[in-house]
Length: 409
Image (tube, rainbow, N blue to C red; front, side, top):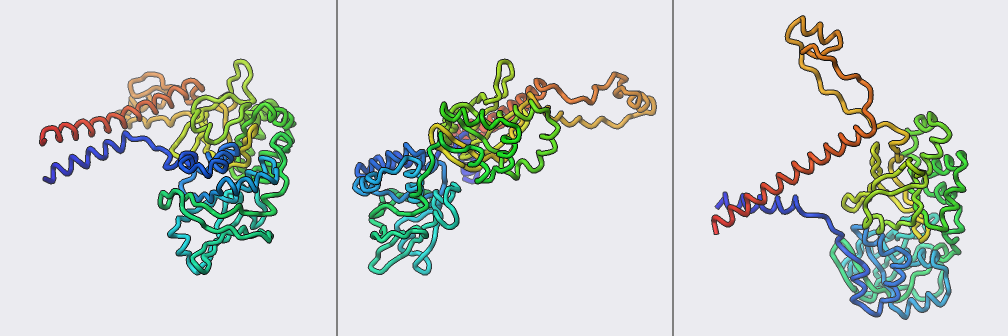
């Protein structure tokens, strides 16, 4: 009996090794089951908020029905402002129906995506949730100065406990900060946007190097920028100063892709990306690759992860990353660490090794760094070998489990 259980556990482990990670929820599909929320669902898509909701593990969406959305649309807000308002209806925490009616001390404050994306100033973007008398639950942005009715909880639409709650509220949330005029992406000063949201150093480099016009001129046709955070650039400055003027320009342009890509698009279009630095035989490309919920950018030298969104409105997307992207055209990959030589077995062999040969008297390899191509090949071979080993273990475990189950049955 114990042997049978062991093999069953082995089969489960093998299945887990061979499984792939998928998103736990899809807000578009959830709301599609409720036709009276079709307008709200539509604007989550066109503002690209749907992709942000799907990317997050823990989220609450306060949906407003078509009548409530008609009142909002009647104010003729531009799309960027509408995105800020709808962002206020998305909480970065889970509030299912049960939790809403069991709020500790009767009131709590939670952050919305409007606050999380850095668009809100000060405490704007936070929402107060209050468990009121008569079983009602009210929602009010902390900076709300509206004399209109407070939005209240109506019912739960869809819930995946502790991952996502989609609830209906009575009317839209109002906030002076969210409703303030917002510049269209094509009118934005890209470097100012980066400077205000944690990428001051990268912004300063673009301006001082005189390549800001290349970024600005590319917005109209579509542009995605991967902006290293100030922390990521702190240790990199000495290496940056050692580059030539052309090298500095190429490095900065290497962080821009002349096509608009939302976060969802990056997840579904893994592969090579050309950059603003690409020219003729100078590839200056990198690879986009998913790692669970994370999106990673891989060069031959370094791997960076997208850690935040500064703006995501077609035709412009700017994402914050945790590493400076280093192109192989400007930087050498670190050579692999040499394997330790065996201790000499005799004095004569030691002399041979000291003279520059190995213990058999042959000439040793020079200590110089490997070429880019060789470094890339070493990396690919290493990755292939690891995949073969991992896949082999999973396949062997799964085969053994199936064979045993067939035998005992």
